[in-house]
Length: 339
Ligand SMILES: [Fe+2]
Image (cartoon, rainbow, N blue to C red; front, side, top):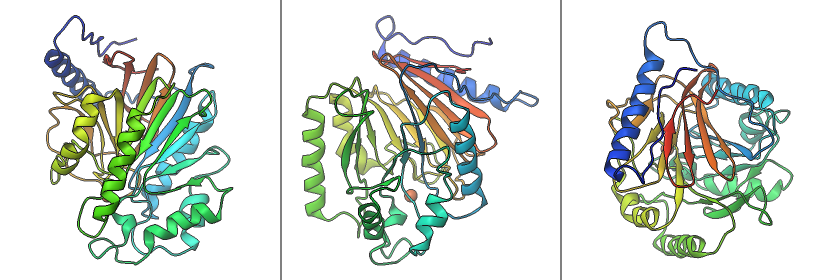
C-alpha cells in the first residue's frame, strides 16, 4: 500500500511542528489525489465488529440533482459497510427556499433511502433554516422542523431543540458524546436570552462526567475555514475557542461553507471538519494552508469510531474517497488512505 502520511506523535515533536506536519501531509494527500491520471481511491467499507459508523453532511436542502447524487452515494456507501450506520449528522441548511410540509417527505424521507440509511438523523439549525429576512424569508421555518420531529416520533428526523447532547450508541455504554449547538449569532437568529441559555447548557455538558471516550462538538458554522469569501468566524472562535482548548473535543463538525475540509489550527488539538457539500452550489476556496480543502466535489463525511481511534473519510458523490485520516486518543493525527 502506498503510504502518504506518517504518525504525528506529539510527545516526540512540538505541538507547532505536529500541526505543521499535519498540514503538509494533508495537503500532500490532497495534491496526490488531484494529479492527472491519479487513480481515484475507493472508500474503505470493511471495519469489522469494532466501533460504530456515523455520516455527516451539511447544506443539502436544495432539492436538486446534487442533493440526490449525494443521498444516493450515502445509501450506496452505507449498503457496502459491514455494519449498519449508527447515526447521520445533518449539519444545517436542511431546506433552502420555502419550506412546505411535503418537502419533509420529498427532500428528506424519500431522498435519504430508509432501506440503507435507517438510523437517526440528528439535525442542526443552519442560517437558511431560520427563515429570517436575510435568508429565505419565511416565518416559523425553523419551528416547522422542530415540530416535524415532535409530531413524527417514529421518523429518522431528530431535532429536539436548537441545542442538545447525544451519546452513541447509548447512554449506558457510550462510545461518543456529541454536543449539538446553534452558532446562529447573527442578527435575527438567536436571542440574547437564548445565547445565555446555550452558554449554560454547553458549560454544563462539558463539565458533566461522561464515560464516552470521544467528545465532539457539532454546529452549522465552521470556526476555521479555507473558503475564499468567509474564512474564519471570529464570533464563534471567541465564544467556543476557549472550550475547545480546555476540554478534550476531538472533532468540531460543521457545514455552511459549501466545501469539504479537514483543518488543524495552531493552538487547538481539535480536528476541524467541514462537511458542507451536501447539495447546494459549491464555494470558492483559497489555497489551503491548514489542511485539506476541496470544492470540486459534492459529498459527505464518514466517521468510524472505536475506543482507540476515530477514522474519517471524505467521500464524493462519485464514490471517490478524497481524503482520509485517523486520530488516536492522544490526539495524534495520521493522514492516509484507510483502505
Ligand atoms: Fe449556511
